[in-house]
Amino acid sequence: MINWLSKLFSSQKTPDNTNCMKKFLIVGLGNIGAEYVNTRHNIGFKILDHFAKKESLSFATVKLGALAEYKLKGRTFLLLKPNTYVNLSGKAVQHWMEKENIPLENIMVIADDLNLSFGAIRIKPKGSDGGHNGLKNINLILNTQNYTRFRFGISDEFKKGKQIDYVLGEWDEAEKTKLPERLELATEIIKSFGTAGLENTMTAFNGK
Image (cartoon, rainbow, N blue to C red; front, side, top):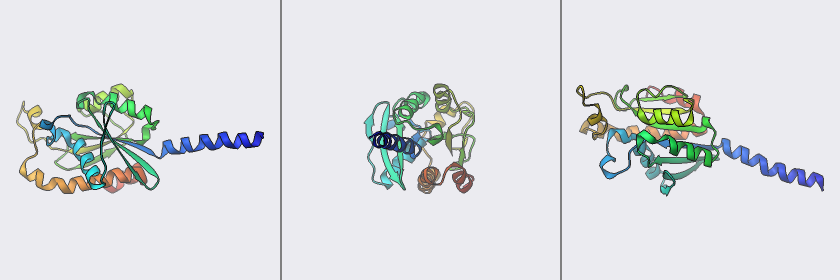
């Protein structure tokens, strides 16, 4: 009887721990509202929307955002679009990280980056906010910089004093032409992060 109970409790505990390690939170940063849909600052949303469309997923309205679930090779990917606006994204990340018991190393945050040329990819395991207010808020709320960030270059082709207008502006025609290929690449990066691991993903995709 004691042996049977021991097996029962151990069998309940082990899958929980295993499942946590196979669950990934992919956060795309962006602003809610139709006026922001095609803006540079919303590349995080755009990447997750492209992923969802490609894989026939639907986003459900949940606490602090919209969430879609994707399964691949025994892994579960939770795609999160916070509804808190970019600059207050940390609360949504913290809530879903804790609710789903997702370890810090299984979190990836997708953000735009003015310091990279358009479409350039940089994946890093940690780092400063680089002047991005969304990352700054996440760092503050989580009290750490040690989570994976996927930076998507939007370049810095704006005149002095026009940064906000540029970031919140829409893609130009040349960028719109190149964007579909970059979005396809981004979906592969997300899958690779969960199935091949961070180091292999950085090796395969950084600089592409």
